[in-house]
Image (cartoon, rainbow, N blue to C red):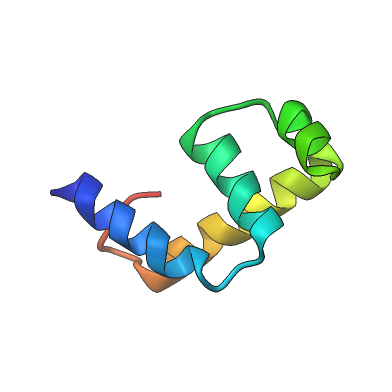
Length: 70
């Protein structure tokens, strides 16, 4: 049940972000891939990948505080 809720929450929040932020979050947080590898694929720096993923995670925490654990 928690996993289904998290999936729906991520889907809703990701719609508010650009493609690079979505891909950075999914690759590093969901797929647990190294930021450097994701950065190379997306043409970003590793710092930009970390930052994009952190923005998405913060938004998830802010929007769904108390309902899901991110």
